[in-house]
Amino acid sequence: MSQLYRSTISSRISKLSEPPADERENDDELRDSLGSLPSQLGPSASWKTPNPAYAPISSSGYFAQALQVSLPDRGIDVRAYYTPPRSERGGVVVMHHGAGYSGTSFACLAKELVELMKGEVGVLAFDARRHGKTTATASDEDLSMNVLVDDLCAFIQKVFPDPPTSPVFMLVGHSMGGSVVVHACPKLQELKYVVSGVAVLDVVEGTAMEALPHMHALLNTRPEGFDSIEEAIEWHVNTHAINNPTSARISVPSILVPRDSCLSSCTPTNRSFEYRWRTPLRSTAPYWESWFTSLSSLFLSVRTARLLVLAGTERLDTPLMIGQMQGKFWLEVMSGRGVGHLVHEDDPTRLAEILSDFWRKNEKLDVRGTIIKRVGER
Image 1: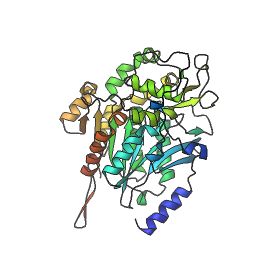
Image 2: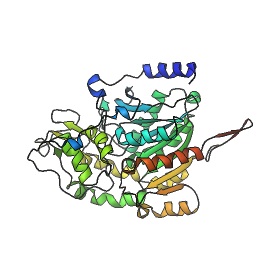
Image 3: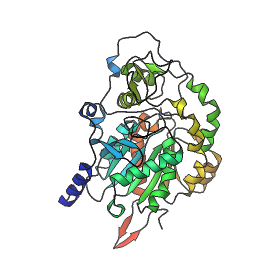
């Protein structure tokens, strides 16, 4: 890495504040909405000794740094997790989680991807408003698609303020986050950022919209809280909400808040628990339809390379099925690998391989001084 690049990165990062010391040892997060919610009821009200097999694991071993990025115009201070590329020519994979989850749901994937690509790309994940350790300086109740998209664009502009010298981005989004990155891609391109590709993880407009009428009934089977972090992790693993215990131990802690936290409302149904959800999914219901309306057509129209990763083929709707047969995007189905809706947590090794291949397939090539453009570039 050149001295100039080191200086540039150091200068940029120095303007972004690190989280408080008491949070640095336990930076974690997780949990989404419109996917395969477990059907079993939550833990009993009686307290039990925490199981050490489900003790939390710090995300510090999976990202190089945790940052708190202030966006005063957006009224939020964003918690971010970043592993930069090893050289100034490296790209950055920007990852957006789904509803109810957080940036550390990508922790295992981030580590696998950086190691697989030998630092050729970095990874930047973050907590959306009203999620994880992102805090508000004004009302943060609005989770409509336009707000989330503007948040993402403002966040990238703050971390990488100069588009001509910024790295090439690949945008990766899970569930709700997949819709956010699809909507954000053309806006970032208008701002002159280079986006080599968009990868959407296990969300399809047709099946998501069909699931909406049943969401409240599914949420009724979800516990309102837990008596320990270990109990919450164990519940996620035992109900197969997350099929990777290591990832669950990293990501679950930051999707919960302690009883005395002001980050999530205390209600008659959750006040008896030591920990409750950071983002109660029922509270996001007014925004569900806006998250997924027109997603398929927007995905097929973005002017960059497109990747769709699904847990099963039954999740492919008609427009995407036609688009896939026409070769408009790259489709990967991870069925048969023991994965559920959280494909990035359940099998981060395989997904890292897919993303690495997708990145390399869509790199801009310089052949004897002539730049060969990526798919979708003008």
